[in-house]
Length: 615
Image (cartoon, rainbow, N blue to C red; front, side):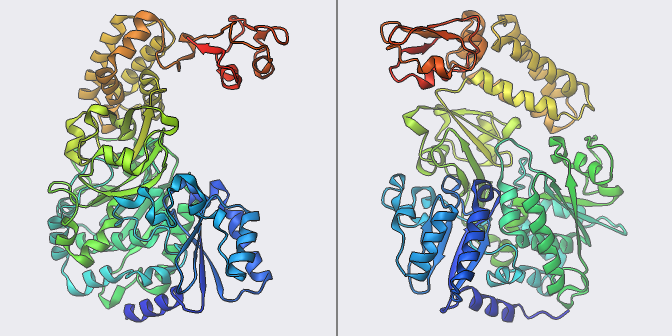
């Protein structure tokens, strides 16, 4: 099929950048929708229609990045600076339509300039959050309408696929990927070009590409955001990979908990087939390529490639021994290549711009960028993309803005349940695959959870291990039984019943589970426990020897007392206590009945005189 991409691009650019149209973009990724973006967008459309503002074009987009400011609305008036409105709601949107879109006057108090934390910035791009970022994977997220293929064409969409099919041999495509040094962004960091080269020479009547969108780490939302904001970048990459290894069929394995991503994928696939960039005889090259979606049921273990394959085949998601590796014997016994979403989102640009371009940023052994979902005790929560080699200190303080309320940074967990805690002593470690492993953590898929002085590290380890126990497939004994025993010990410690022998048992169990588990889920499950015991041994010993939680988090090890000299008898604590555990007369010191207290801390939160202490 003959497709004139340049003509499509020119027409799409003209539509997006029309000098007669004001473009109003509403962030409609899951983060924006959950914050209330849908009624904001509906109000925008209604007001524009009711006022007959034919020069205004309302557009949805994916994640703009600054999740703390959602819902976000950006206004592009031809010939004028972009205006970013934050924390929008339908009432604010109505006023913006009336005063800005119709009246021509910016509603300053709703813009980012009206936020004190913005330090005078007038655009998102001027914020410290963006200063050290480099957007490759996220280049279109928050900019284009993910439900309109024409806007992807405007950003050179499918040009890389045309180049691969019409100007390169499959071997040349693989050579470029090898030269780029792109490593898998799903966690292990295996070289993408090398993986493709393993599958390419294998002879079979059918080969497969699988997109692993089974993003399961707590606090991780990178892949979801890419699929919601730029689905065609992933589709284009899968087609390029299919051509390189000789696969004509792809499965996108995405969790059912991502309904927005699934819907936009379906729309993108339908539009790509209609445009002729997917399907039969693409670009007249004789190459056929078909895409299907498979919904996962939310099992964390299905992020492991052999468990994922079993799930697609209709079996229970359980890992198997390797070899054989999927590149030789994968889906239904056929050669299969599995890449995750972020890995794929790099590929079209590498083919279009070249391996040297990709190697021009990042580090020698970890070229390119990495997308992170920054969350936890951090001022600037959101989605960010930084060059490999940037330090953790730069991410936490320069981009993330440090911990809220002046609290001291304590640790950051990278790699989710498979990773480890990184403390202040390692904040100057460059972020790359090998650097994080060297300090006892790992890159993982890109979740980054920040903890401050109020977090209990024993409780953090217990949280991640509880997650792993729930998500173990149960196939191998070390993971199935060993992680349960570790969790039982942590429960014992956090309830004040632990002993020093329990700490020794944790160490021994962790090592055995790490060495004998079948897949990476079990092999890495002990990491959060091992890293917290290494860096915060004093907290474990306080729980065991002193029967106390230094951070005041473990409820069974804390209690609340009212300081009589400070109590004014205002009764706020008693009125808000859910257990009716506080008694006392008005204007007289109150008392907490420890037998009734549920240790929720509500009394302390409501006391205006600092008369309640946690011990």
